Image 1 (tube, rainbow, N blue to C red):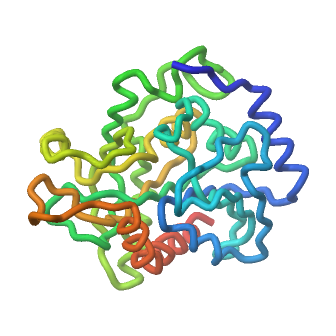
Image 2 (image 1 turned 30 degrees about the vertical axis):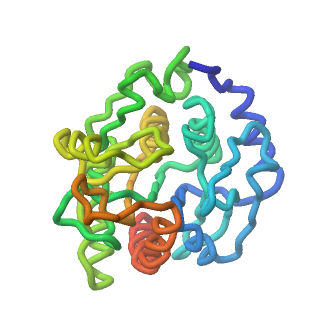
Length: 281
């Protein structure tokens, strides 16, 4: 199962970041594949390469820049992680828990998670934004959980409740922000799979049968870690492609298509995140 990150490693990373910025954000934002340009809208930014932060799991995937950006969004101090790491890159789930642990140590109370996902719900279409209501954490249920190993009671309980993993009030704010910007968002269940291969038609049918509305390879480990520490979580998926079990013959999925669709949805995603941040106060 790998090793467990230690309190000392969290403290090392936190101290290194604090030595380089005076910001004290209460809001953290994690940007998924193709969504990194949102960080460019942060005002008075201080940017820190994640490969210079002790113990930080560095992303190796195209579309994930690997920076922490501190600054202002809608007049609020924010911390934006531009580029996340994934289980399929070879990291242990415990290592993937370090970024939200450090964000919490820096004072972040609300975590906004974004990702690019395939649409399982046939009523969706590429370019939609989906507020995550709940998730199916398949690697977690199979033993790859970021909370595996000894529990640090100073961070959270041994068995954290996940009933409302995605904060209902934040979901309402997201929908309202979208309406204020002139469009509607979808809402549904995010199915988390390990990747990195895209799913077979049989796997997609299984995920649909299990209740998934979108499928992706991130987000759930960060949600579990954040909820363990009592952070509020908002999750938003960009439906980058339709992951249906019976596609048009000859249709193939590619990471480049995911990135391109993410770029098309960025303006609306920015509107939603700005609207939520504005209301958080």
